[in-house]
Length: 140
Image (cartoon, rainbow, N blue to C red; front, side, top):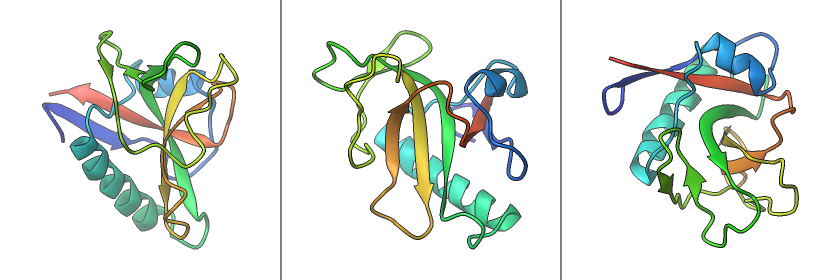
């Protein structure tokens, strides 16, 4: 739970999904990371949940779909747009991100690593990739 929302990692085993499928899995509500403090809490939750259900040896890390978007072009301050339209900045970008050359890379992903702790953080990705799982959220 964070800020009156129940956050749940919906797939801990099974197939990875593109951006469209998590919207159905989560009943249209993917979680959003709204601050650096929330990032740390959610990061630890995802790591514990994944290791408990899947194990550290199967995957060195996991990529999780979030509900926010990223405007690739004309965004010099790397602002992330929340579902309510509010623009925020996070300091936890994955090395090499944000990607600023492909305007379609507008979906926000959180990468949690178990071995390569330098290659973690927030990134912007194409909605068609299928290597991430959804992080769902519902108001309580």
